[in-house]
Length: 192
Ligand code: GRF
Image (cartoon, rainbow, N blue to C red):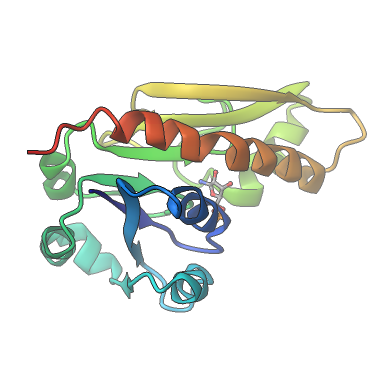
C-alpha cells in the first residue's frame, strides 16, 4: 500500500477530490491530512471520510520534527500540498526527495511566489489582461512556486470573466487533473 499525506490550509476541495479518487484503489490511499489551521474546513472533510487530520503550529512546521514523526507513524510515502500556505522545512524536504508536490492555480512561472495564493492569483491574472491561465503541478524546492514543473493545463479567459469566473475554470482543471497526476507519480514508487 502506498500512503499519501495531504497538507492543506483551507477549504480542502482538492483534498476531498483526491481522497475520493483513491477510495476505490486498493494500493494507494490518503492516510493523513495535515494543516496549520485548526478551523480549516479540510478537517471536516477528513472527518467525513474517517481520515485522521492534525494541526501543527507555524513553529512546529518550521522545525519539522513532529510532522516527520507523524509521517513515520502513518508510513507516508508521498506528500501532496493542496492549498497549503506555509513553506515546507528542509528536514521534511530531505526526507522526501522528489516526493513532495504542490498545485498552483496559474501557469508558473507567471503569477507565483510569496503572497500569490487563492483569489490574489486570479485577481492578478485578471489585472494583467491575460487571455489564458491554468494550473501548474510541480515539485517543491526551498523557494515558493519554483520547483520543477511536472504538468500544466490551460484554460482561456474571456474579457468579461471576473476573478471568480477564472477561479471556477481553474478549479475544474484542478479537479480533473490533480488526482491523475498524483497517481502516475506514486505508481513509480517502489515499495520494499
Ligand atoms: C487551489 O486553487 C490550489 O491550486 C491552491 O489553493 C487552492 C486550494 O483550494 N494552491 P482547496 O483548499 O483545495 O479548496
